[in-house]
Length: 84
Image (cartoon, rainbow, N blue to C red; front, side, top):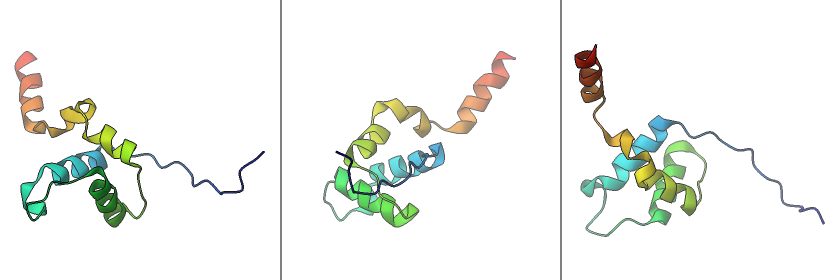
């Protein structure tokens, strides 16, 4: 039986968006002493980008899989220059 609920199209998430979410989540000044949750991350995402993401997507973005986005880009460029 086919579902009558219309599915929204898949939206590609850019690394710049992932980086922004990770920065917001790790910033202690964006809360009033309360620990942030994945629901908070989804709400923040919706307020910034106009569409929601699931808690599992937020969890994946905040996982170590995307830790490389936290690295300072200038350090990466310096390492490449030293090799060459």
